Amino acid sequence: MSSHGRWRRNGACLTLFAEDTRRTQAIGRGAANALRVLAALRQRPVLSLKQLCLTSRMTFPTAGKAMHHLVASDPKTGLIRPAGSLSVSPPSRTLSSVG
Image 1 (cartoon, helix red, strand yellow):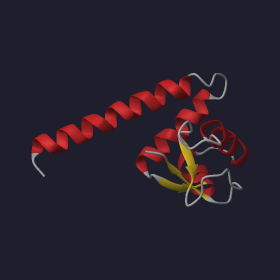
Image 2 (cartoon, one colour):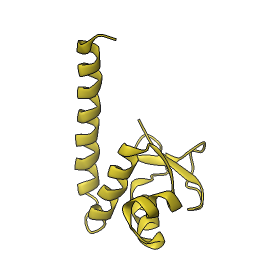
Image 3 (tube, one colour):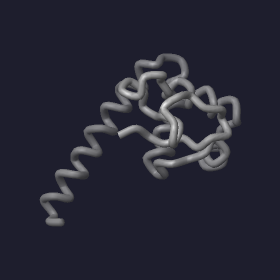
Image 4 (cartoon, helix red, strand yellow):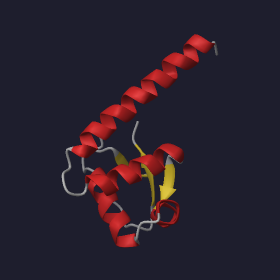
């Protein structure tokens, strides 16, 4: 891949990240923790709730609630979804970023 192709791909990712951040900030009170979840998913796109708690130093309930804010029943409107599923799953399942 040419450097121009890599730049376009990276630019597209940055645009998506900015849009995700804007949508997450609109959540309101839970936005700060939801943004921490998004940051962790940018580093590792497939992540279990347990892994998220370890990497972000969030408690299990806090991480679960932050993920709940980011999951939507409609995969077109949610920022994250349970990996291998289109429905909200128990917190023990792995989550991945939509994109």
